[in-house]
Image 1 (spheres, rainbow, N blue to C red):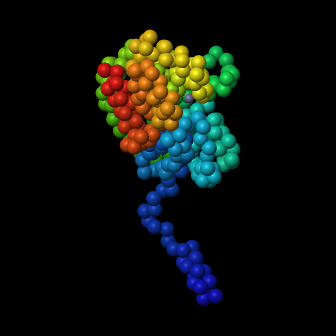
Image 2: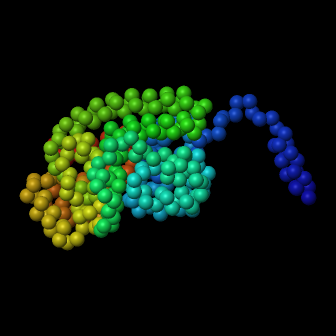
Amino acid sequence: MKKLIGIFAMALMALFAPAPAHADPPKLKVVTTTVLFEDLANKIGGERVEVKHVASPKFNVHFIQPKPSDVRNVSKADLFIFTGLDLEAWADPLLEAAGKRALFRGGERNVDLSRGIPLLKVPARLDRAEGDLHAYGNPHYTLNPEHLRPMAETLAADFKSADPTGAAEYDANLAKFLSELDSKLAEWRVMAAGLRGKEIVSYHDDIAYLADFAGLKADVFIEPKAGIPPTPKHLQYLEEYLPANGIKVITSPTFYSRATLEGLAKRTGAKAVTVLQNAGELPGTDDVFAFHEHNLRVLSEELK
Ligand SMILES: [Zn+2]
């Protein structure tokens, strides 16, 4: 009983305690699908946001299974940031489970970062035949470093709309980010100049936007269709295609079959090279600049 009275007294004191004079404003709670978006949201949101991501970068973002803790985080979130298209097919069920309508696709607190991105490989008609994962066009636009600009601008605009009192801070963070990006892009364009016109084979067609930035040719994939593992017949075709076209580099993120990659590399004399699809896939690549730096560096080293 004494203990209960004590707790009651403490609760009363807390109730009547004056608010601290310089209380920090509550932070915008943000959930992103990926680590890349988490880093970008932290760079643009700064001290005003608290960001959590759903998908571990060690796995294929197409096939993530959100956890109950992700549902809880989304149900408390002010903003949900994702790629859009059909990259995260699990995003809509996650949003529905969390039940906050403003975060649903098309809702006012749903941040679809594909807004303003010039999309590649948009099919003339919607077709999921043979399990195509890219039915709305290629969703891997985050691999072109130039797309960081429209993505950062979308984030700043949506942060300002959700938290207008922080507008000046978001604008300042955006300006700082874009100026750093411009100097990085100048370096990366120099690295990419040596890649122009060269051909590579990628495991999945997550390379389209990086190939577009660097002027690389990448039209043949280890997967015969996005999301479909290679058949023995397709592998046999690749074993002839690579040497016949002088292809020296096979690219893949870390989460596809190493045995398939190494086997094909061994039989064709090409080299299997890790080109990241997700920021954070390898240690030290959580940062969006480090992520692009890694990809451009390995390609320019291997395609000298
Ligand atoms: Zn894909």
